[in-house]
Amino acid sequence: DSGVTQTPKHLITATGQRVTLRCSPRSGDLSVYWYQQSLDQGLQFLIQYYNGEERAKGNILERFSAQQFPDLHSELNLSSLELGDSALYFCASSVTLGTPFSSGNTIYFGEGSWLTVV
Amino acid sequence: DQQVKQNSPSLSVQEGRISILNCDYTNSMFDYFLWYKKYPAEGPTFLISISSIKDKNEDGRFTVFLNKSAKHLSLHIVPSQPGDSAVYFCAASASGSQGNLIFGKGTKLSVKP
View 1 (cartoon, chains in turn orange, cyan):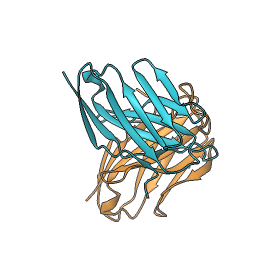
View 2 (view 1 turned 90 degrees about the horizontal axis):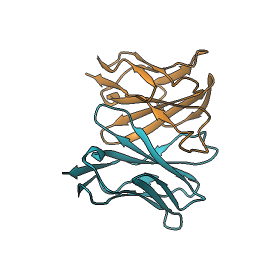
View 3 (view 1 turned 45 degrees about the vertical axis):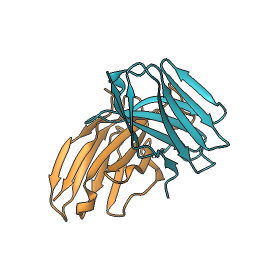
View 4 (view 1 turned 135 degrees about the horizontal axis):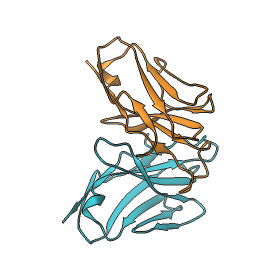
């Protein structure tokens, strides 16, 4: 158990709909990351928040947005869903902004939220 | 364009032997490299990391080697155990990138008893 909690674990929704994925980071971690894993693309970085502020953006679509709340939990909002958005969405957290990495400072992943768009 | 490449989608090894998983990268700005292990229905689990100022880092049965000139790193598992069977992801990060990781597509390791 990494200590990163994601809900829901599984979600099936129709095209055009909107969903919200929730993440609670490890206790004490200020940085939250969202990654998307699709079958052909591997793990793709979407966005990062640190202590409530957006710090880095990756390959995140404009239809997607995220936020980190004062209690440090984060939500990823996916709207106008398309079939191609079906994927496993991971949340991860770390104590600091990331580097330098070591066994004492690394990024811990949750178990993911499976999204199926039909 | 993939910045981190794991060219072997799968690897099969006999229990007790060495497993060598390879990873190549193209971005010379990467200065931290991590290996994650992933079991089905679980999130990636951190295994071992290496900074670009080192060429080797060891943790128990796991050793990561970094060849900066070749932009290549490898993960050695000795001896391999059936419980090591999982998908292994290589990831890289550059200082100043806020720590976000660029992942390879993974190598599925099967360790046969």
